[in-house]
Length: 219
Image (tube, rainbow, N blue to C red; front, side):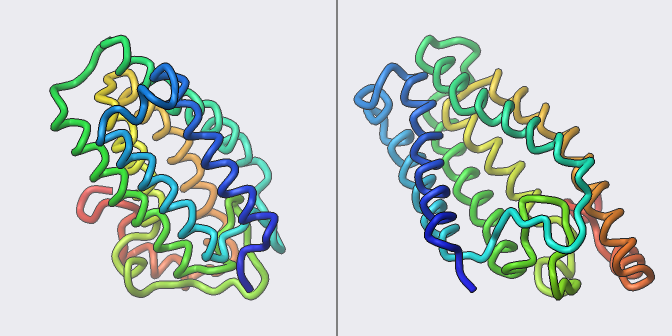
């Protein structure tokens, strides 16, 4: 089972629409692409979106969903829209910018690396990966590879890529927006682990006992 044409269209069209935000923030297509780091950022963004089309990630509520956690999606949506526009606008007007062009390229590298880390678990989990906190049909625990060390590699990739995105615009305000994503992310992790614990019981407890949530040795 692969991503449906509708989901593929939604992914690519949504990515193009999202890229319009920093272009507007930077005053247009021409000004945005005037710097090679911003051009690289756009290329990486589209490359990740194309790769995502070939995954089996979905937004299915599956057999059982924690609907009480859906507010997190709204929080990510609002913060994501702000992160799409505000850092680019700050960059254009020179408000609270960090360091020099070196910071832009550090940001692009973090965005690319974090994006890959975000996507790899989607391919590993396949149709079990949902944008919702839900148990999918035939859901089984994956406890090897990346998941043999940390339980939420995709969320770690999300944080790294989010930070990389705003640093590509050298935006101090963007860093704050990234930090504001942490509380809803932690709420989602808590809801997801509670659901998996209720589904898999002692097996999940044992898995949690020998792994870290996101950062080995720290969290």
